[in-house]
Amino acid sequence: MKKPIRILSLSMDILGEIDNYESMFFNRSWHGIGAIELRINRYQKYADTLLKDNLILVGTDLNKVFIIKHREIELDENGKITENWLVKGYALKSIVAQRITIPPLHTLHDNKSGSAETVMKHYVNSHLINPVDGRRKIPQLVIAPDLQRGVHMTYASRFKNAAEEMSTLSLTSGLGWDVALDIGNKKWVFDVMEGRNLVASQSVNAPVIFSPQFESLKSLQYTQSELNYKNVAIVAGQGEGVERRVIEVGNHSAINRHEIFIDARDVAETDDDEQPIPVEKVIQALTDRGQQNLNELLQEEYLEGQILTNSPFVYQRDYDLGDVVTIQNKDWGVTMDARITDIKEIHETGGFKIEATFGNNRPTLIQKIKQELSQISGEVRR
Image (cartoon, rainbow, N blue to C red; front, side, top):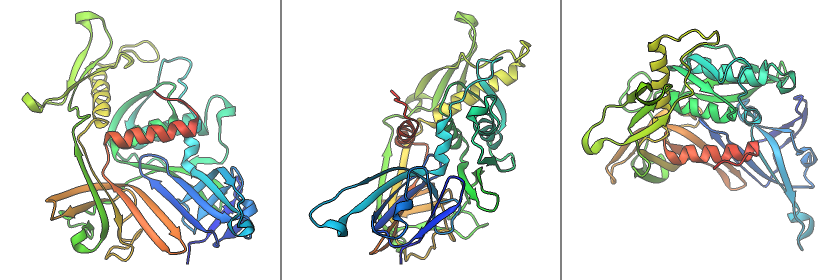
């Protein structure tokens, strides 16, 4: 039996429940933004509620929510039987992509220091929940309490897509981000998440090992590449000529050293009151900038696979999006501990399937995220 979906208005009134669609698949993304595609005959009950900007809630999972952004229909010689709506949408957290990071009037950049969670929630609060310009506020959106999780960082943003900044901060810290429903209060809740450590080498949690040999993977594709690899950043801050502040991030040497130059002249050396920022804080900010850039250029090593639905591990109980698991193929000599960064759920008449992507910090993932975000925000990126 296919999983039912509920259709809600933007004000979160329930408009109908549907379980007789032709097919549905959607992907959940830890770092980026997921999407949904649904096919349903137009004569089915409540098919007329699948309208632009209505919400699709999958089952009772309040973190599987999508906002409808596209629908189309065709009529052929078979008539009513094949007169199907094709409905597409993005995960609800795509609303973050509707804003850019506009700096305060008194400073060049929107700057924030703190834990990764604190920094991420700062930008959402400043540009979607409590912006200076009330027209930018999204009334339904609230933020979960800040638990100050993740690495400490200093970050600066200026006229960037807010969702792209969330993805960059997520890739840097390992934290995921999402917008879920609070049905009782009729609110949308922005929060960040920590995945569980389920790798084979730890003993705190029951380990999860995906492997064809353990009958937990149906298919597996492995990629290892250094086509875009950099591991040492030469980061240049403010100043001119020999007076310019330059630091180095990374300590590789000889043939294993791959350098990149990063112009970080925008990293401030004075605060909002024109007082000098302590040198150690400036150096830390430049170091953070270098590390953030290197995180986008690490060695590309990841696996994609279709998980057997009748494997020894139960989805959303034994493992879920964002968990770090062990993937192994003994025949290839490959064993890798990696985060589950994307999960695709496929619901069809013939059954239910799961496809997963393991691993992050790879150029293809970052390029894919930026491409998706440019589609959502309507921007053209070069």
